[in-house]
Amino acid sequence: MTALTLTFDDGPDPRWTARVLDALDACGGRATFFVIAPRALAEPALVERMVAAGHGVELHCDEHIRHGERSRGWVAADTDRALTRLEALGVRPQLWRTPWGDCAPWSGELAAARGLTLVGWTHDTHDWRGDSAAAIDAAIGPRLHAGSVVLCHDGLGPGACRDGCEQTVAFVARAAERARALGLALMPLGPDGTPLHPDDRDVNAASRIDAERAAEVRRVGAAGASTPGMLPRFDA
Image (cartoon, rainbow, N blue to C red; front, side, top):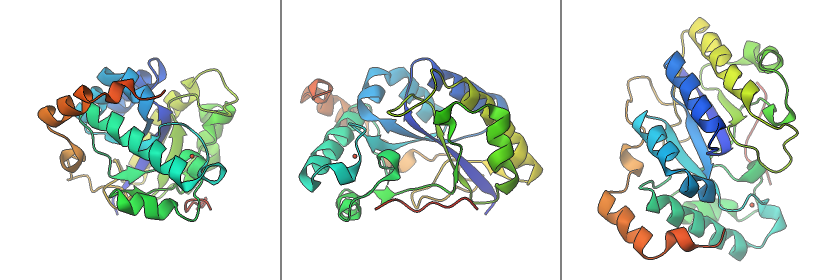
């Protein structure tokens, strides 16, 4: 393992996601974004920028609600609606991080039926609390290692105790410094949910949908669709 991964949930956000992408560009890093489908549909240029830069674009949800608080049928419909929206943008996710990483006993079955791999994280920045980039780095930086999957947020989701993501943006450079010191690259997650090797350049090749298919999805009304056990995690 020669890489670690920064992951970003709850975007894309018209202000903060662009700044996260700028920070990744500045350090030469690539990441994985677990997007909320209506937000992605509202910001197609940001999704296009993610894909063009070689970042992973994967599924978070349509509505940000815990699986354990809804029925299997409700979550299945939410997931299918989200996947349809993302297909309209030309993206077919391979990975799924559920809201809050929360899973019901049947979440894995829903994922498998849709060709998705459930993904958690190894290190949580807790950036939603509004901690400074320095505090986040002090808390998890010394424990980063090859294969680390770091949870960050480029959008303001339910429960956020901050009014912006500036400290998350600032943390990107600190994480890149930590990775360089360890001789690691910042890489997106591969289809198995682990960091890609630095030689794997196009994380989105298998998940792209051709323009004709995306246009077909848009024609059938994806844009007009109505506007949630725990995943593995450990701080190691």
